[in-house]
Length: 239
Ligand SMILES: [Zn+2]
Ligand SMILES: [Zn+2]
Image (cartoon, rainbow, N blue to C red; front, side, top):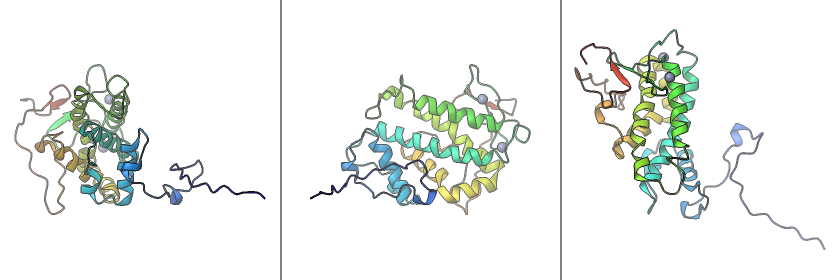
């Protein structure tokens, strides 16, 4: 008599040809049972899919989780999702409409993806910065492991945050309808803002996209000093 093996292994993978509606259709897994080296990423993505509006739950680290790895994996996830905003911006943000990377009238942000930081059009800045962030975060030299990360490498996360945040602020101040549509679907800027504040990765005064809908953007202080003068230049000749 033939026996039938019941296969109970759940494959948590989107096979080629899976329809968008059927993607990620596998059951959730408790973090303690995730045994791959990519467990933290898997867990973060699972939390986002469960409820992208529950930012507190998404940023709540599982007990005993290494904090450096936790911060690192979240930043990887932000960069991946930010590509979605970059794609939408392309329809509206071109080298002729936005010749420089700006948010408010205060700073022109220089693109750090080149040997010498230089002025790139906003859409190029966006691409170059996301590519630069991806290659740093995937670098074998600084991030050889996804299980433990050296403090000196964790220290690099802040400048990545500061640079990629400018993509949100450019979108907000120059392409508001694209920003709003994306933010309504993802709450990515809200999650990013909560994340950088929670882990002290950016100075509060640099977070210029208002988070409370009823709040109008805070007027920028008259002449703040940039926190890293190598990739910011004031439009104002005094600074
Ligand atoms: Zn633009
Ligand atoms: Zn560039």
